[in-house]
Length: 112
Image 1 (cartoon, rainbow, N blue to C red):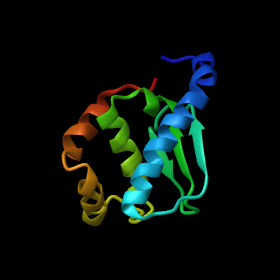
Image 2: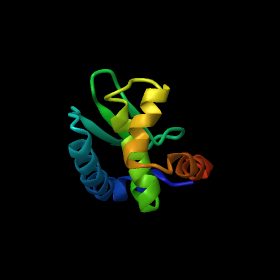
Image 3: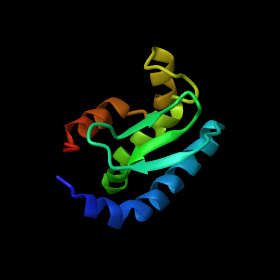
Image 4: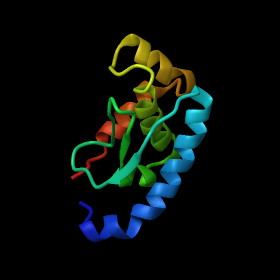
């Protein structure tokens, strides 16, 4: 479990890391997003709103690179397909072909 103090101490570093990954993949996909929030969520790695705002758990920045990339791409792809349809997963698969394997690893990491 991570403390609120850990979040406060690491939030800005996490923002820099996540924004760097986000900008790289947003350019590849040709998508635009609005706001990016870095949060200390208890149950989600990230989320995307219909208003095109992206939220990321600060702990995404602490994940291994392949898992961090997957979480960012997953949320970016919701800007193309706002669901988890076959089309959505095809978008994820364009840049993360082994997303199924990585997804299992991410799901196994506890956020509590």
